[in-house]
Length: 51
Image (cartoon, rainbow, N blue to C red; front, side, top):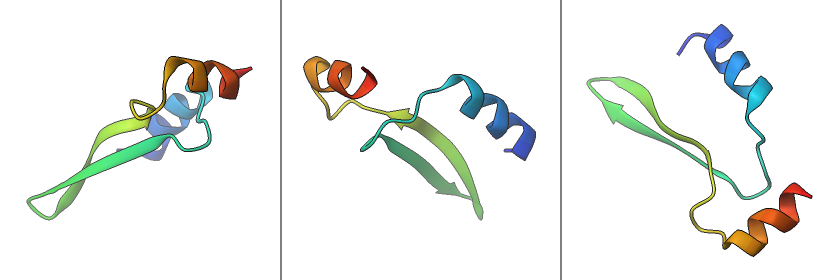
């Protein structure tokens, strides 16, 4: 992913404490699978961290 694309994502995506970013290693390269994901948090936890 070009830095400009990542920079654009960072500008509009809140990155909370304990969020997850996952990459897949395929054919000698890393592909972004998830960015700033929070499936492991309950909705109450997510609301408290964003407030």
